[in-house]
Length: 124
Image (cartoon, rainbow, N blue to C red; front, top):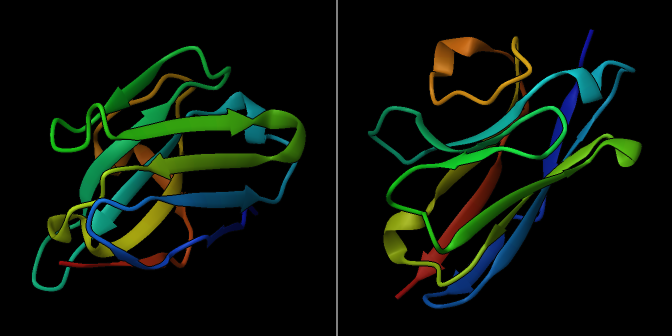
């Protein structure tokens, strides 16, 4: 069983930054790609960013490219999402997820374990 626990969300003014963290339990963290998704009220859960098992490959949604950065520390079983230049439309619950694959994908169905989410609120 894999458990994922997100942290780092909060209230920030537009233009500000937050660093989200996701700590995973289990010994197989480093074998799998990890992703971040988000869901705003009334919207479907959407892809934000994903990173390969070794951290060498990352993909981003067009809406966050150049502003967000995903990284991972396999020694700490933790994946991070640095969010910069936040906009009101970035407000959502952010979820981390573990992929079934070692390579990152944008497809929600490729991810089998999910955290409970951390709320990001952006004031204008």
